[in-house]
View 1 (tube, each protein chain N blue to C red):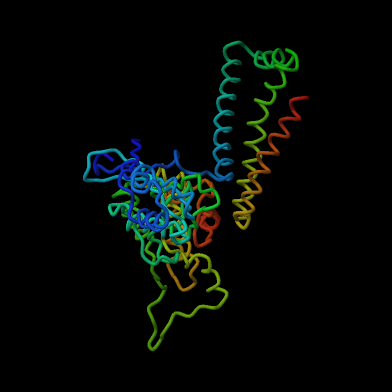
View 2: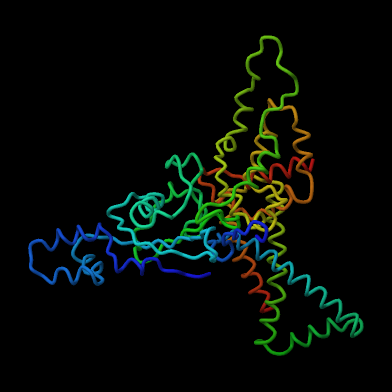
Amino acid sequence: MNVVMNATLRKKEVPPAFLSLAARSLSGGASSSEASLKSGAADSLKKKKNEKIKYFKVYRWDPEQQQRPYLSTYPVDLNDCGPMILDALIKIKNEQDPTLTFRRSCREGICGSCAMNINGVNTLACLSYIEDEDAKKATKIYPLPHMYVVKDLVPDMGNFYEQYRSIEPWLQPAEEKKEGQAEFLQSRQDRAKLDGMYECILCACCSTACPSYWWNADKYLGPAVLMQAYRWIEDSRDGKTKQRLAELDDAFKLYRCHTIMNCTKVCPKHLNPGKAIAQIKKKLAH
Amino acid sequence: MKQTGRPVSPHVSIYAFPIAAISSITNRVTGIMLAFGAAGLGSIEIVAGPGSALSLMQTIGSQGFFIAAPAKFAVSFPLVYHYAGACRHFAWDYFPDYLTNPDTEKSSYALMGGAATVSGIMMFL
């Protein structure tokens, strides 16, 4: 992988933020002003002003350029940035590199758009705090692992959505609604069985953390989709339980799971797909 | 990748594997080691006649502590680890409620530590 340091290009052109800071701090004295501004002034400024620079190494790939993927390094002043990784990414895009491409929407951990691999762990960028204790260690940001990359941090989610569609994630009741019937009723205990599964935001952090899904993404459904399959299997209002279970009963769809448990470790909504999969296997065993 | 022209995002090279994942791949690796070991034992028996595998092991075992002990560890660790790992899988299959983050982390450390300890003791037997 080529490592191109975009930051080295930027040392010659000091960003506007630094220049204005420098102007303010040097306004009183007659120091070696302009010359020091142009040559590595960022270092001397760091000691003068209260600046906390953190470096972000971000995976980049441009489909329009015939180049291999590379890492871009960006310095960010944490004193002038929100606490989350997504804040840093937006700040980089606004102030340093408008071509940096990533998905985002709600910024509060409910839409699942900003799912990416931060320091080796799949999470939502909007919920992931910037580690500012060790400012010397650069933060590494990669797209979700083993996915086709559309551009920079944007993976192709098509296969994932197709797999979700394939489990028929909608209510299929045993009987049609009777005359005047409003809802399909369900006891509190039966509704409680869905807790911990209905909250899934389909961010794909779990599935893309699973090594089995890395090697068999075409045929293995992955933890996210399997947990949703179980959500519909467990729904007492649904009448297609037997068929739903039978659909999963082949060598690949369910049984590529080897209980590696990367999925549960990584879920940003603190759900447990690994356990749900084990419960499907148990149901199929009877 | 050839059809779409798109690269595949990095995976093994960048992922921070938790201890549970390490314990899982170790289970697979020890399984492969056991498979080769069993095949090796079998082929020795076939090639060099019955009882030859046993006499080979006895010869290695009597070479003094610094050869016998590591050899014993190298044989017992895969066996103990893989067996204990299988017991853990059995427990997970029948009691899925054990599949929580703290429990799997604890069981992974226990599995690695326990197998190493038991094999360590076996070095001296």
